[in-house]
Length: 428
Image 1 (tube, rainbow, N blue to C red):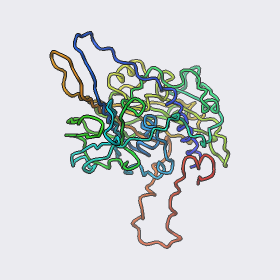
Image 2: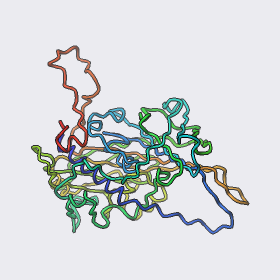
Image 3: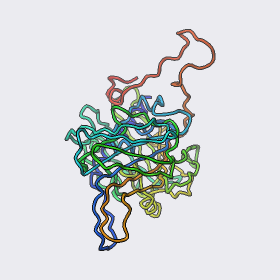
Image 4: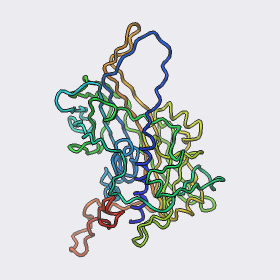
């Protein structure tokens, strides 16, 4: 348990480092030459839709993209207990963000109204986060990892020449990142944020954050706020099918990964982390952290942990950064397993389609004064533990095998915080 927490802590630091390394906005797409004048939009709405299987959700291991985009940090206790959503099946995740060039009338807030079939209630509140003015970084109280980072990449029974690349983890966590550690060729386009909007509100937020337990997003959606025009669109794309990863022994001690093909997927990306000596016997040093990705080149983190448009995904499949949508297997090199030992976890991401709405529609002639735009992105992801059996549902309440005495009942699962687990002040 402690070793897994330390590995996950390293992933959190890498995610925060990735956010800092990807501050440059996505390059603007060149528009074809036209005499038509285009203004706006006054408001931009982003709806990130995910399907997750395994542990976690938008705030867990499987949701590193949500964490990177929204600044959240994983709660290891929730990840281990499976409280991010339903256990034993596909989970859903939503992230809603509204940004505007208009000033709010009163507090910047709004509501996203759903149809009953969405199983989200009548609406969820969009609230403005506080502007702290601080850096989007790892907290000062966070104990930074020590040891080394060994990075591998590519599918195959054995690592290619030149691997692993060895990096001092303490220097990495302190912000001394080597060039080209995180993906620089994948444009980061997170849409509206607090920093680039005059008025801004989002969901999940402190008032409301329960992720959908089922339902369908098909049909009409309406967004009303104090700082943007009314937004209405009809969504014809629903949650993607869940990914289910199987692992087994491969040639020469490699790890064989396979998964179900997901309709509408535009490409896949897998990454794994492990540490042979992480957290052993209370040692605060992490030892060697091993990090592997499925890309044919050294491409890690950044936008690859987020949602990616079909156009970008197509280019990344062509250059080997992403696995093709028709591919349903990958062999993790034996050297990765040898360096990481038995304790590894990973995430497989399947990127999906994108729906875009603009109001009013482009006129045939005359200026196009856009009031608002809405972008809905889709993805599916799965967290897996290679070589480990399925986790039982210990957190699912009492078992139906009759009454037990207090001494026979299982103890309540410990839910350590990330900080407490790493520092040893609140771990199990």
